[in-house]
Amino acid sequence: MTEHILVLHGPNLNLLGRREPGIYGVQTLENINQQLQADAQSLGVELTIRQSNHEGQLVDWIGAALGQYVGIVINAAAYTHTSVAIRDAIAAVDLPTVEVHLSNIHKRESFRHHSYIAAVVIGQISGFGANSYRLGLRALVEHVRAGN
Ligand code: CA2
Image (cartoon, rainbow, N blue to C red):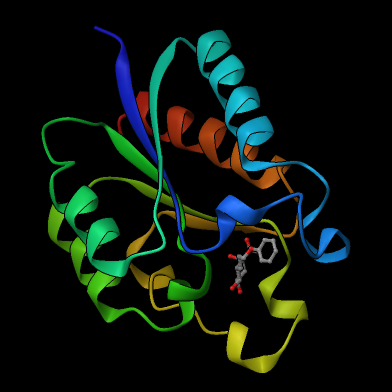
């Protein structure tokens, strides 16, 4: 059966390509999602992609993922640096999860250096623009198929 993966985009990522292209690139979220769907087809997996500006909505989607998806790719955006609730949701469902960021959060303001979710994910990919998502998806699929 085709593996089903959940991709979550956090707050303000719906604005991509329209503001701050110097930091986040010129691609819109729709462009990124299209590329991810094309990658998913090549990899032979199915993707559900969602974006929300609301912490509780992201928590609900993560909580409902158990039994529906084999893993999660998440850019929690600003909630990365603030949300114990998202961290707890990821830990609770215990699905393999990859944390991605467009920018290199470790090269930016100090408040972005700490990620609440880093400790409960397989790994973090940060700084490759839209490619962070593509690399994250590939890493997750290989991890799942390796049976780790
Ligand atoms: O680099 C990333 O992917 C971030 O997760 C993006 C977040 C930021 O708070 C994290 O520290 C790093 C911000 C996403 C907001 O996206 C915007 C897009 C266009 C214009 C303004 C913000």
